[in-house]
Image 1 (cartoon, rainbow, N blue to C red):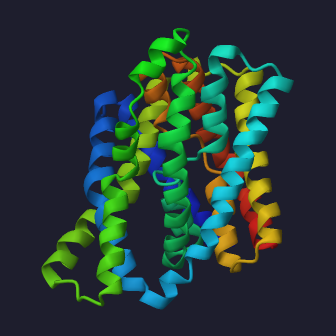
Image 2 (cartoon, rainbow, N blue to C red; image 1 turned 30 degrees about the horizontal axis):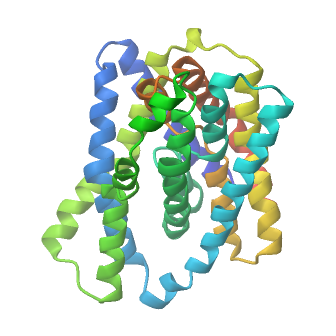
Length: 315
C-alpha cells in the first residue's frame, strides 16, 4: 500500500510542476490545449494500441466484455439519482444539466489512467479502457445534451446540437487506437519493431503531459477564484460518494474479478471531466460553476484518494 501511495504522490507532483510552471509563465492557457491534443491524438492512441497487443490474448480480452454491464448500469443509475438530487436540493435551473453530467461522468483518462497505473500497474489497463468506453459514450451523447439544455435559450441550443459531432468525439483517436490494437491482437499479428519503438516513446508522454495539462487548468481557473456553494458541494458528493457506492453495490450483485471491480470503483470516483468547462463555455451554460467544480474536485481528490485506496485494499 505504501508503494501505491508513493506512486500516486509522484503523479500529483507532476500536476504541481504544471501548476508551478504556469505560475512562472512558462506555460500559458494555450499550452494545456496543446498538451491535451498531443495526449488525445498521439500518445494515448499508441499507448492503447501497444498495451492491448502486448498484454492480452484473444480469449482473455473477450472474457472482459461481460464486465461492461457494471459501468453502464452504474452510470445510468447515477444519472437518475442526480435528477432526484437536483430536485430535492433545488440545484439552480441553469446548472442542472451540467450538474448531472459532472456527477455521472468522470475524468477516466487524464487522471484515471495514470492513477490506476500507479496503483495496480499494467494489468488494470483493459478495465480502465472498458470504463472509458462507457464513460466517453455517455458523456458525448447524454452529457453534452444535458449541458446544452442549461442555456437560457433552450430552443436555440437544441438546434445547435449535432449527434454527428458527438459520434466523432466518441470515436476519438484514443478509442480508435484501442480498436486497432484489439483487431491486431485478434488476428495475432506481430507489431513491427519500428512501430513499437516509435510508439513507446510517444506512449510514455501520456502521464506527464496529462498531469501537466491538469495543473495548467487548475492554475488558470484560479484557486483563489474557486467559490464553494451547495451546488458544487452536490457535485463533490456525487463524484466521491454516490458514484463509487453505486458501482460497489452493483458489483455485489454482478460478480466480476476483484481487480476489475476495484478499477471500476477508482474510475467512478475520479474528478470532474476536464472537458466540461470547455463545453459549458461553448453552449453558454454556467462556465464558472463548471470550472469551480472541476477545480475543487481535483484539489480535494488529493486528500480523498488515500482514503478510497485504504477502502479498496480492504475489499
